[in-house]
Image 1 (cartoon, rainbow over the protein chains, first blue to last red):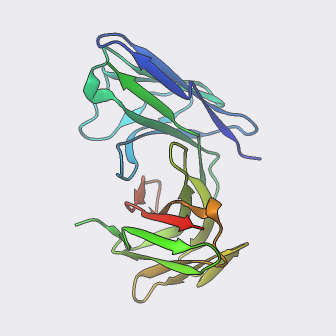
Image 2 (cartoon, chains in turn cyan, yellow):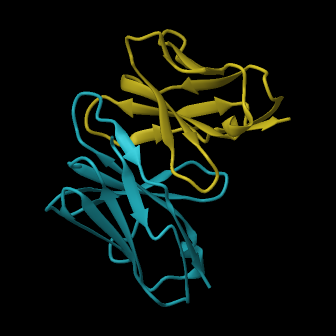
Length: 116
Length: 112
């Protein structure tokens, strides 16, 4: 149990276009979903935290108008990178949590974004 | 200074050998400490989760230890396999609903 999927697994786009990444919890309802970005040989950096039906909370330095997060249901969150630029090229990973004392986060397989 | 420091940064071992990865942290208090395995180009997968009161937790060939006094944790891998080649990340959760604190990971390469 506790499987999180992401789609697409990789995407290549032209500079200036927008890209949407989906994150789904397949077999549980996620009270909270998280979006991370990871550059090569670096640790995961939290971008934002979202709860179903409410606005996402963005980490300092993350532009909320550039990285649009929608958490429409307890099993789906989307991250849209608007007007993508080459510096947005990165590995984007989502995770989902179902709460509880341990509040374990289950990570998706990641999406590799390359902006040309 | 990072709140979670891992060592070594990278490690190469022969298949079948054991190894131990280290994690030193300054996060205090904390709710739990986790070790994740991340294959290249994949998301992290949980190996162990220990609360602050636990000293050791095993998951197959993986054994994590926690010493809250010295603020150190280790991950011991027994009888390594080629498929163990990955990054191993130490992660702490502070008390309360706060973001996880990630180490930079140790890159392990197991060679034949």
